[in-house]
Image 1: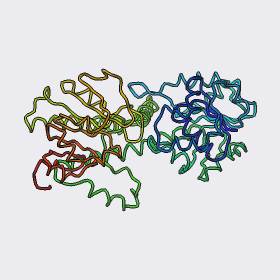
Image 2: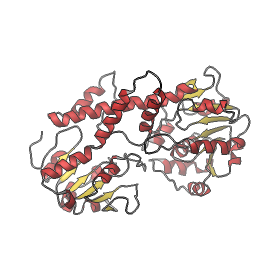
Image 3: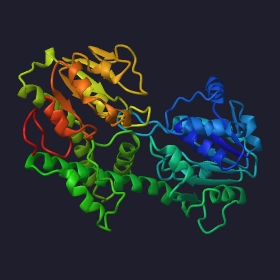
Length: 434
């Protein structure tokens, strides 16, 4: 029997993936009402495939607020998502409280695995501070991606496991769980595993920042980044899966958290973290692309912002997720207080009065009605199916910001839109293609 302590996004996805491998799963959370909703298949997170996984394996799942149920588990994962504050710093207090609450209930010979994202030194500190968590303590790197978490949990690329002694055999029950996922297992010391997660995210940030910088150059010199990216993917040193799609900076919280952590770890040493400062500045600059481009487009059409109604399609920070942490869409909404805003998102619901002059609409087309400008900050798949003719007929103006190229630029320009996309020059209404 495998336990998961903390039923946020991390614990739910890994718990259901574990059940799919044939294990009996105990999911513990101190919130009894949450456990009741989960038992009925009502999830507080949105992930493709999560509901189907629950339906197929619900008989192997037991959600409970009774910590005593963990005593039967041979392996217990601590799987609470660690929140970050407005400065992207981790708040470890909820995790520490959960550890203190559940530790007395673990079997003396159980294996405890810290699956949460924690800074280097955290796992070893649990042992040195005398907090007993079963008979074995490990740290495991999680590499889930919002919007694709179920697939990554079920078919991981590799497992990175932090150990007190990386040369010692792993506990048999934990080794059996790892083997069920049929991927490479990399044992290493606690601190190396904790830093490995941060290292992965830093390399991702470098790809994102480089792509965004060069894509912005394309917008100003007449080049098209979508023509360049295939050449990079064919370079073995970069690869076919490189992050080469231009975006609106980094968001979601996890990457930002790791940049803050790297700077903190380097404090008091001779290490130069200037590159991290540059990544953070680049992200902030790129995230402002929507507002800059929107204001320039309105000025080109001589539209006073106070008279503009903006349709905003997408509130989540990326597609296929409920999360709005550091969302470019919300930053844009907060920065255009003088405009009326009509928004739609397939999953996210914001409270009434979240922003001045803000309305959330039931459909994408409803959000477009009477708007002078359409902005699409989140590339939800359903937006690719929008009927441009119907959208244009519903709108009162012709400004279209489509950062991720969900719609056809030529068709948009032919229907009277000034079309703007990341990584390519703007295509103005009825103008020849660049």
